[in-house]
Image (tube, rainbow, N blue to C red; front, top):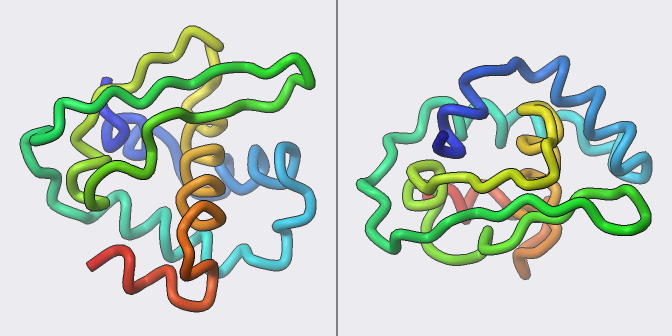
Length: 117
């Protein structure tokens, strides 16, 4: 399943619940997360040019981690396959990806839209 398939299989309200459970400090950024979620649903995927696999892992703390989310553009990322040995739900995968994408970029929340271009 690709990241885009996962995002399309859920909705923002369910993903927001996973976000608030996994990242309670981010509740003030719901509008930014909603915009990113909608962009992930509508961005035209490439053909997985980088053949990158996003790997979802469950840490000892119980939190989730996503590996390989910083390689390529958003259109590349949504076309990548997701390996989910953590058996995370679609909402959890979307939440961890969006959290890592926004917080892992140098531009942070203020300029995250630029990273979608």
